Image 1 (cartoon, rainbow over the protein chains, first blue to last red):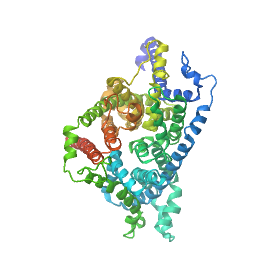
Image 2 (image 1 turned 135 degrees about the vertical axis):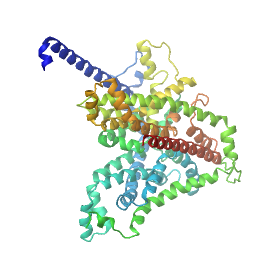
Image 3 (image 1 turned 30 degrees about the vertical axis):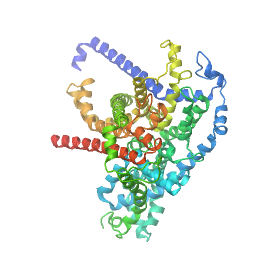
Image 4 (image 1 turned 90 degrees about the vertical axis):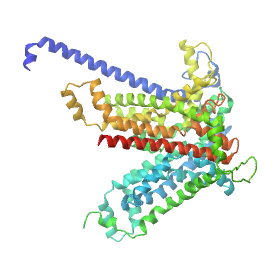
Length: 293
Length: 301
């Protein structure tokens, strides 16, 4: 304070300089944020407008960035001409079934690990190793087995692989949620004569429901996004959206843009929803491989 | 009674019974096929030839690691895609994480927006960019022409080097968000008192970044890089859509060339051997990482 009183003018000047510097800093921060958003979201914007363009817009120069007369006709063509409706439904059905099955199978296992430390550290380590396993190592024997069992080109075959593939991930996340769950509530139920399974289903599940929803959404999007197993194990009736999209690349460097972009828009839709709903859990989910095929 | 004692007390069969459904499924759908594949990798099972096969010893492995220049090339291709991708993802991810700590209001929504590319499948990411790279209708050529940067419609995937650059760019676009989120979590776990103490000692700006942030973030960075490294060894969907391994095999990754051996040439035994070479490689990388980590901990203790 004493110094400030001695040299009031310098202080006010340096205070102003500080304010200017802070303002410039904030401005630069926001410029960088906008640049990052443009880079990371620009492609999605372009795909969306492309899917809404009329065919004549593709040939126009200068290029049409935002179509004047947007229409959904490429989506119509995708759904009818390219059987997009069927493949979209396939993706929905397979992802939903795998998600439910993965939850059903993983919850008791996670409970066993969280409450009784089943398998000690070994089981947790084993599940982590499975997460690192390259899918390509599994698809070769699985393809041969599926051929023998007649499971290729069937919902069941795909759902079985996807369920098992995401069990390690689901167990890892669920163990975390179960450890946070207060044991006392469960004890009360057990004292009242509940069986262990009853207690799990009617006491634990309702309370950790938000956690279950997180795991469910992650397994849904992981299954939705999966490609290697889908392209090897599906046939003409059971293709998923991921497989359909790649079929447009046969058009060469300039493919059929309308339907291709429409299918990309539909294919990335779940990712948009999940990114917003699961904000808080994104790090965990991505680190454990919850979204990668 | 000790809290939790009742819950911990159990019938001896219960833990196993609860865990058995998923363990059984993992045994049938993952462990058994992997063992079968290992057995297969020492035979010459070829779907294009017929159902019969015989034991050939380590011939497949010898072919993969000595004679198959295509596979050996794919190891090199994978490495030159992984290297720059990791560096760029780390630097860009760190930059974005630091940027996000600087904004107060709106941080959650901007973080979620930036994370979207990491949530879409590799196939969709690659498809988006393949269309952007399109020769006549692609956004990149059109924007370039409009801005006067280029004057011809450029084919981005005709040249091996530019193809690799394009793949790295798409990969960085796709997965930088992962690094950002991991590093942001790491940054937020650094206690602010350290910065206050640093400021009292005259460390500000670059110095506090260099002497406080970076050392404390090192472990997070290593873990994030390791996860990306393991995932990048699986690079498949991006290649399948962007280049299908071309031009002339210049962008074939290990996973992609194994896929071709199995489902293009139908040499199942050989593909099984290739996949075990990949598993071995990933194992060596992971163990090497863990060993370095332990060594550093020992030295720090």
